[in-house]
Image (tube, rainbow, N blue to C red; front, side, top):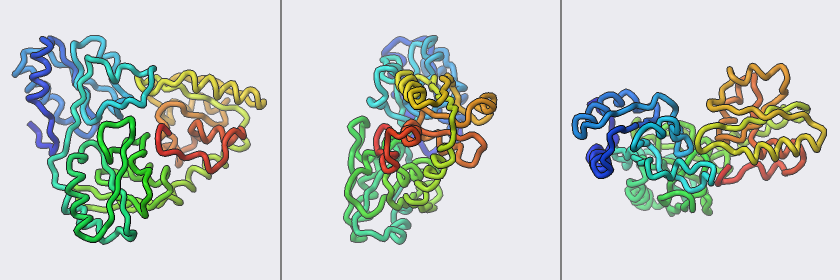
Length: 333
């Protein structure tokens, strides 16, 4: 099998298939580990005799269960995420007994990069958070920080399984009194969100590369303030309904449309599975800006583009229902 520094829990997968006498098995993996999908499918089939179907669709989180594949298999293994109770009744697929979450825990030691990060941590009290891939090593990180004289604190989202765990749409674990935040994990998606929704300085430490990135709350927020300012003169809005299994918020979209109409604005409801600039371009001749009721972090993907995409809370600022200071919230953003 292609070497990845993650635990794919093959034995557990085989046990689940045999226990359920499953004949048709689905596997859904994040893009970064898809090169291993065919070899994983071969291994599962060899050990169980089951037919394995690989999802070729997106895998952004527990909000993005491949519901179409789920309908035709006996069990679906969703990799890289945990179940999330904050999705609401419109997304029961995430809690369906046919869905089995494989967390893809990393086997890479986090202590070296935490030692590197100590030099960039300026405050005395540090909040430590991570994604589920490294959550089992949070104690090691806390130990290293304590050895260097840091007062370490972390919180827990009531919607998530583990203390210190964050999602791209739930940063409740960082809602604690601290000077700055240490995020352990890869990429800029989570640390940028942490900075945006806490307003604090975030040091992102990547255990795979031993590299650091720094994010500042004020800088991240300025980007969103500018986006809202650009939309202040808009009169026609496209309100997007996300059609992914855990992102469909029709009630919210209808509410925003009604509020827009009450204020003399024009609004259209647009249902989309994948929300991209290319797809929105077809409506640009009519809509001055778009409002996103699906994944709240999608708005940040459109900062540099021609399409102006706002979050629901940002739209409420425009129509006078919310103050500028109220745009950011740590949970269910």
